[in-house]
Image: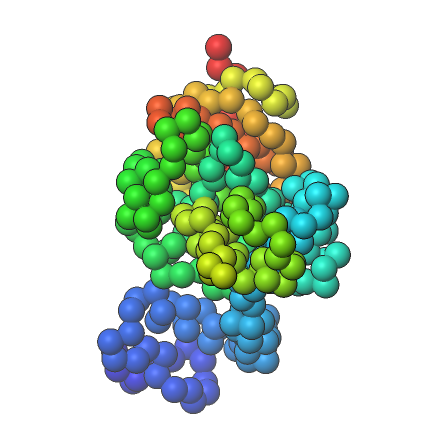
Length: 212
Length: 83
């Protein structure tokens, strides 16, 4: 793409597309240029949004899970309204209107996908991993979820019901994994270290504590 | 029409032009209402400059896939009563 196209507006700016840029990235950049030019958003808004997103991490979700493991009353509040529970711990659940926590038990294992795009509880887990956005994960999670879990190294017992949640609309799902055995004496802070991002997506179990 | 948890529903098979958030792989399938999430703006008009109003009830619908259960969020205007 060259920079000498016929402009409908009169101002200088850098080339809208860069060599080798994927089409979606070029489109996003073009949209950003237009939104800024029309005064809908500012560069500072964009920068703040990116800063917020990359400042989020699975450590926040892990704090929620660890608290739920040690405090049954908090767990009930988390399952009833995860957004309110996050705010209670001083966490920022982000702009998603509703976050729903889904609990793994002895009988039920949950995993989360967004087949349409990449909906994800970003406020509590940070940016989604690349595989979560891949066509392979998005299509196979709803057609061969046991096969996907197998590739992640997770084999469910035959009697466990597997539930796959496709976040197709306004709800963001966070899996509340099962507390690992052998963690009875651990503090909330120690437990939080065991809670991985993947265990809150539902493709893995939490870490097991290091042997003493 | 409002549906209740436990009620059998079928996902409509239409394919409207423009944005909609009902995945093709559940269209025509029968499932069971698992939960009502509340009302949310309609992404089909919001994606094309509209305000998304009136808000639409959003349902968590469970589908038995044999070997696992699939839970999908489906807006009310995509659901029909099933036997």
